[in-house]
Image (cartoon, rainbow, N blue to C red):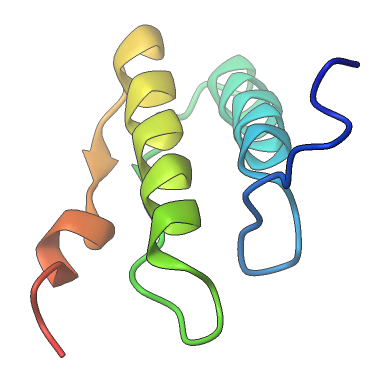
Length: 83
């Protein structure tokens, strides 16, 4: 509750980056439970969303993929530096 005054980074659907990561965790675990291998992907730059918010979401997504031993497609870093 200490972050009430702090703006939470938001992703494409208006979802805070931390909440996006929790949704990805659920989906990844459900996919694994069904016997498939999920592949996570970071968000590329999206108009209207600050790059700092996308960066945080990308870092959390990559951390989640690493912790679960899953492959990750890093669209954020691949597009970095492109107009």
